Length: 289
Image (cartoon, rainbow, N blue to C red; front, side, top):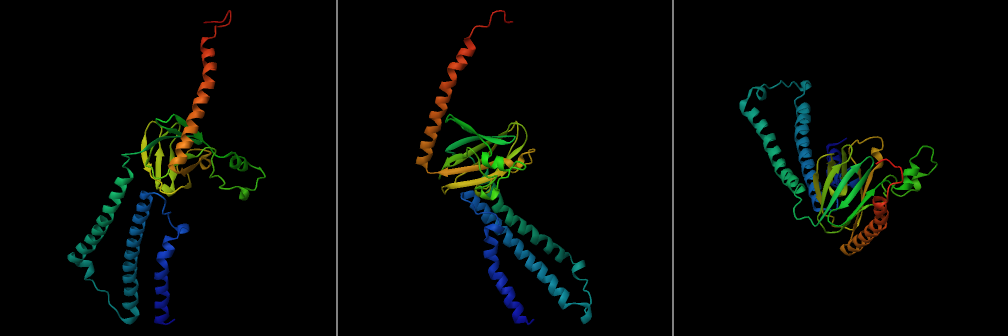
């Protein structure tokens, strides 16, 4: 193979590499939030820094092995192994590279933890094996569990063709509904064991620990349906507690929230008489007090 052919092949690889690296099927998603895009950009920056380091290091190694091979009569040079200047240089360069990567990474991490000025706060509680969402100050709370169709299909010898199910094991009965272009603050905790609320499109992955409250936030800028899963080994049905977030317009969210509040009030009103009767009913004759 001629040098020109080799150069052409390498050139084609270098040209195609950026498009391949950004392909979502082999890379982390860009996401639909400002933080997710910033995380993706940071990821790609460090990725290309690593690629550049690999090209320089392995290029120097391959060139040295080929150029100064023993068959050509080359004799090993001892200069680099006894030079203080060289040792300082190859120690200082990695330090500079690490610092240059740490600065943008620290800025992104600080932004990811900044939950100030949230417009909506939702308490997320992890259970074995479901999630509870409580819209704080809104009077709306509900559980979100694996959809019945997926739950039936995963049972042994169910006979259900899972390929016919949409989003098998990634569908729930009650998704988390949030408005678009709204900063949503999440307060995460667990009721039994440690869970982890993870939605890749939001760049949110935070543990839900019993007895502790962790914070996270996201601001979805695109209407749609986004899925995730528990990312902590939380027991037998760990793989069957998906997360579904439905992002809707602010008008649709207001209507949905009002409907949920009315339903909650109606349920509370319907349960109140029974509870009152139970509390005030006299004890049967002869009953022990």
